[in-house]
Image (cartoon, rainbow, N blue to C red; front, side, top):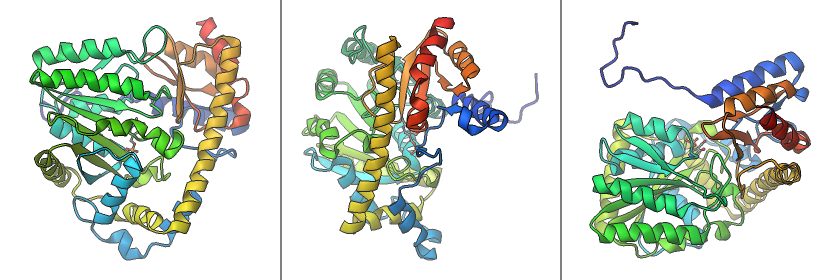
Length: 412
Ligand code: PLP
């Protein structure tokens, strides 16, 4: 056994990230065969049609012009007040539910997920999400002494599996008094699914029943991809359903500047809390701020200032929105090519609605991805299937990808 100095609770921690592995293989292949011959569908960032990591031009312009003081100075622990106000406006647009709300700045959307788990899941408890999920949810849960457990996202007709959600929530609440549920929508990573308003009202009905029976439920809505999910108010319509919820049903939103502002590495986000009860919101602000102090202290002032400047200047804002819309349209176009071809060749891709990724279920995702390497295609093998990053594959390279994936699926 190798020697260890780590504290007993830290021993054995090791990241096994399928995404970085797959992406390394793609980069190596591009070096050998030339990037033109390689399809790198592993990257979780928008690559333009020239395969360059793209920054929204207005974001770049504003960011580069920031005075040095806006870059180096500490920010308040909770975040710059104007940033927090803008984040709340951006989260809800014109679909603001009735209730009290507060926001706290976090290090990216991942930081927001961190804070939700840290303060709204009991140590040792189970945290619930769908079986197709973003891997770091489970890393974050384990780091904070919780366990991630899952319900089936889809039923046999590939609709939202309300029954599985209900069964899992009621089962967990037999042995827990409270429950944190993480739902990544719209434009779910890794499937591209978006819960409909109907799905949401069923989710909320189930949760309401549980809290009527004395339980406490917190829902974290991870909106990391909301900027690439469709028209602003259309994609947020479900948020109105959160009006006047019972006190014991608390809702949070994980906001991220990574995709929406193409500032992935700047690590800026926010956690927004919404409740019918002012005490609960005051407490939310206090515990979140405390956890920030205990985790990273304060966050990226430059990124916050960039967002504030864009939001407070109508010309910049218009420009920014138009530019981001064009990124969104390109991603849509790429996904449409894939889904159309998938339908034609019978590839059983999951119901993609929007976002950076789509997925194909498989019994042996590793073998499928391995087989795809024969065609110099690199995708990410997840537990339940293969993930294709439509955000990163050019429209030209999308052509024929579904056919080749179908062949790989049939081969294994
Ligand atoms: N949630 C999901 C589902 C994601 O895929 C990501 C990023 O990949 C995030 C949240 C948070 O990203 P970040 O921490 O970069 O803001």
